[in-house]
Length: 183
Image (cartoon, rainbow, N blue to C red):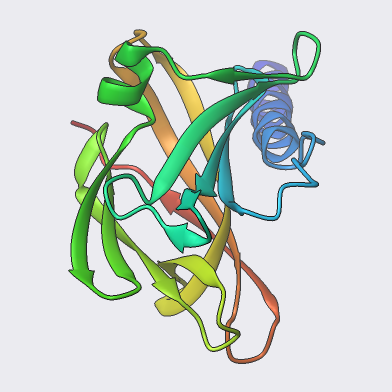
C-alpha cells in the first residue's frame, strides 16, 4: 500500500512539474520588437529570444510588388542588433513565398510550410496587415511563437504554435494555441 501511495505521489509531482514547465514556456517574457512602423508581425521560438521580424517592404511610398514583405532578425540574445537572414534561412525556414492576388492583396506562405497560407491586405484603416485565422475568425496577425522540442536544424520538432493577433472588428487581442501534427 505504501509503495502505491509513493508511486502515485511521484507521478503527481512529475505531472505538476511538466505542466508548470509547459505553462512557463508559453508565458516566457520575450522582448517585443517596437519602433518599426512597417512591422507586420514577428516570430519567436523556444530556443532563444532572437526574433524574426516581418515588415512591409515599400519603395517610394508604394508596396514593393516583387517583395512585399522583408524578413530579418533582431538578435536579442546578443546585442539586440538587426541582421539579415542568411540565404538558407530565407529559402528554407523563415522566408515567404508571395503570390499577387489583386491590388493591395497578396497570399503569403512560409517556405518551411507551404501548405499554410496567410494574407497581406490593406485593412479598413487603410494600412497593410497580415491576416490569419485565429479561433476560426480572421484576425490581424501580430506574433507567432513556435514551441520547439528536439528535431534537427532543418527539421525541428514543432509541437505547438501560439498565434497572437487583433480582432479587426473589435480591436480585442486574440490568441490561439495550435497543436502541430507529427510528420
